[in-house]
Length: 214
Ligand SMILES: [Fe+2]
Image (cartoon, rainbow, N blue to C red; front, side, top):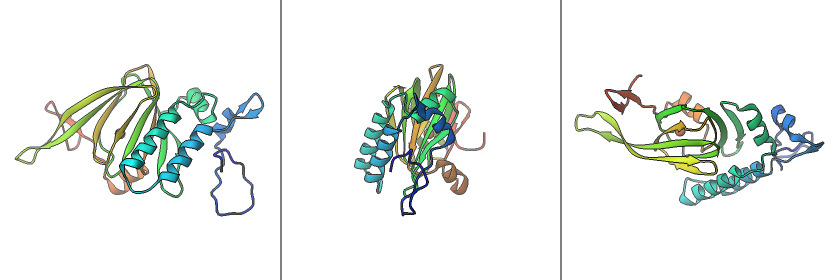
């Protein structure tokens, strides 16, 4: 079933997705409806491969996100992102498996300070612009104190992706005037944070990143 499938239809077991208004607005190109082909391909392929976290699943999802980053600009979801430049927009949520694809348009200098995503694995893809992504290791001193040590930093450019597995600590900083990021997450990160408090955000204190209240 295509992402832009139109209801009504005969009652059946499939979940039919009604295209959000903002996508319809951008879907009428020269009188024709432009399909979300790359988005459909991404979600279909990830659904088909879905299962327990594994190297194969990460590789499939990474490959598909790579392809999605090369989508035609006329695809409605991408055309609307470019037109609206939203801070955050959910592009897809899988009704069966719970994975989520989110878009974020960041401004120059926007920094998402060190954090992890709890039990979830995520893949960031840069659709447009350039973002520095930094990783850290969590070090515990003999006295029990926690501090982060920077492991690596990468300039992630349009068309490139970075994978973070459960517990991986990372920071993002927008280097270009704007940057459009696609973030795939294994589950709804907002719910994960609110309901279970599993996400950890680090604070800068005494020159080091550590845990605690800001
Ligand atoms: Fe993150």
